[in-house]
Amino acid sequence: MYHHHHQDNSMHPSTRMSIPERHLFLQGGNGNGDSGLVLSTDAKPRLKWTPDLHERFIEAVNQLGGADKATPKSVLKLMGIQGLTLYHLKSHLQKYRLSKNLHGQANASGANKAVAAAGVERISENSAACISNPSMGPQPNKNIQISEAIQMQIEVQRRLHEQLEVQRHLQLRIEAQGKYLQSVLEKAQETLG
Image (cartoon, rainbow, N blue to C red; front, side):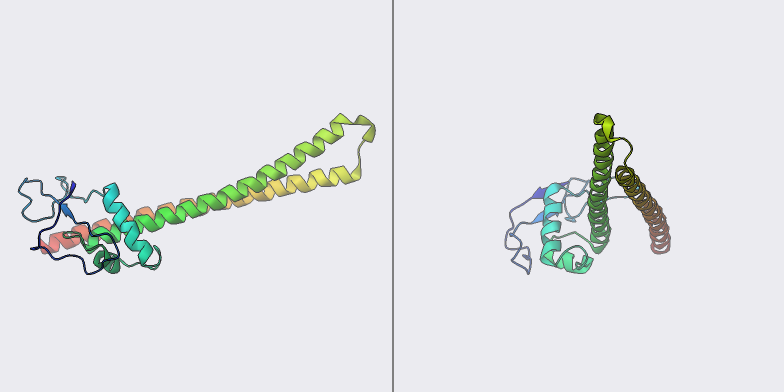
């Protein structure tokens, strides 16, 4: 759990002053808070990112030019929070980049849906025109327009399907990478411990 504390002069302030001078300390599960850093009491302790800590993270990432340009080491230096490690930031930065990319794909997906909706609307308008005015009879031009609208709809559906496949593939790769990293971490812990 994170708590805000006002600093006395015995602690070293962050070298960067661009982020408001706030200090966050991670308090231990033993209640003493002696180490300054305490993780969850799970078998595999994890850092819990509070909204305030995440906000500081985002401020640092934005100052470094965005998620793609920021590195865990540069974010760590800029945040200047005692007890925060590269391991914490690597994981959080990776998740942050992923969420940004998925959000971008969702927006692109929304644009394709708008194109699909326009195609469906055009089909509906053309069909309604033929039905509402039976004296028009079958006109080759109207049939061509309907055919084009259907082709457009099929193309949009194909693109959406491709995007879904790409997202599925990315998700599988992310899961595989997570499992690999977990196994590497476990092997490193066995080696060190």
